[in-house]
Length: 144
Image 1 (spheres, rainbow, N blue to C red):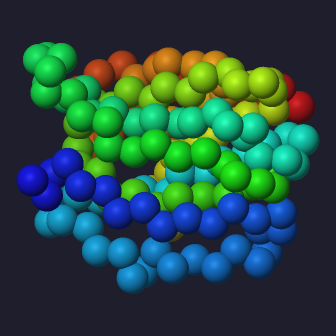
Image 2 (image 1 turned 45 degrees about the vertical axis):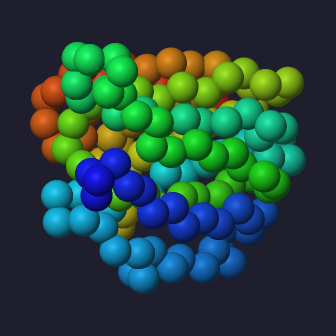
Image 3 (image 1 turned 135 degrees about the vertical axis):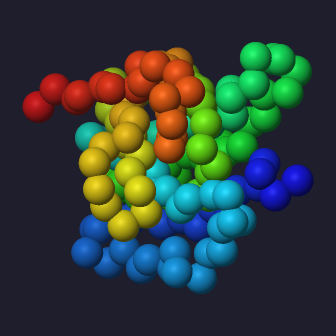
């Protein structure tokens, strides 16, 4: 089913200037858009095992909800993933891990644009892409 596929490409770096972006080589299905998920760790040592999971919750039948994406920030202060997602409603879940207060993330269209979803850890929130399929509760703004 091409609607449930995602094609992650990733980069976890200490220096974002050295971030090699290979998103152009990643194809999406015709009914999907490419998004960039930025991952941040304020201490700079990665997410210490915490996982960000994205689930398609567009259907009201819970058995049909599919986890499409699961990733961590292995090392460093920031990294990113490119994923292909169709329009709909999604749930983002991330546990707190040992140092959840260091974790933040955001989702934007692949080449910039407005913030579509963001969060810290721990969190469980919903966000729509390309529609008003659900309320956007993923609107975390980290404290500075």
